[in-house]
Length: 327
Ligand code: NAI
Picture (spheres, rainbow, N blue to C red):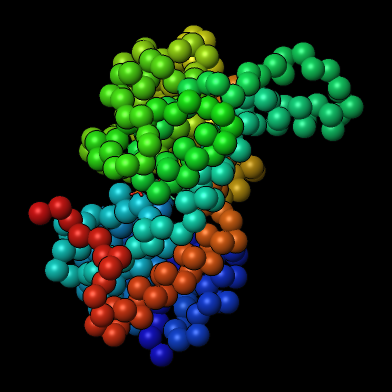
């Protein structure tokens, strides 16, 4: 039976992979994949990894020495892989789409929670504090949503916004054809939007797409939601803007320094990351721990496609979900 070394395994991963898997021995490891832990993959033909595993050139060298042939990413993003180092040595397969609804619905959930101050209200009422002071939000109906990236998730999010009666504008260097979307340039999107939602991948071009200069163009009341990748936002610039009341608030499911913090219980530790400590303390910031994907449908889809990718690899079939470095 072929073996898969499964890194950064969480109970919800194990539940769904064990339900779907019939053909492989999966060795689950709680720790992340990194150069120091790659040796655990000895005897396995595949490793299965996630968004915060460290798949740099050293990790790839080590896996390759051990005879690992394929990295099965159980996610869509692959910005944490040194693709050039893997070229010609290890195949990289991913799950390009599982549930765009999971992420888009979470993005809207965060906007509603932030705008209508639902977490604050919940905490108050649990203490029998039924005051409404400080809980005023605004109607989404009639407001403008600016969407950056109109791929699978962005398009679902657009439909949700339209369902709320919002005007939608979007920026994407590869506009969707005949989708009835009003595309504008980035600056116009920053200027006109009441909420801004990021749905583009992290690339050289999109790193810090929300920076000081972008924020300078925005409305003072704007709500920014990021369910894509942390490095799309310059967190220091975001914090300054929050401190100086230059934006209305932020809802973050991802954070640029999330690796080592997110997905783990750090409640009994001293968190020394000053930026996230300050962001967490702001009343107009909501943070979730990269959980936008976390629905039953998405977990099932991730397990099915990841194992199908390995089937296809072993059977020498065309690899529709292969990730290759740009030529
Ligand atoms: P997709 O590939 O369907 O769409 C991405 C869109 O971004 C494309 O239309 C592309 O043209 C556009 N894009 C590329 N460069 C851009 C740029 N410079 N500026 C603006 N747009 C640009 O991807 P999908 O499935 O919609 O996912 C989007 C992102 O969501 C992923 O890259 C990933 O980072 C994130 N994600 C987050 C999850 C979470 O749990 N928080 C789960 C799944 C995905």
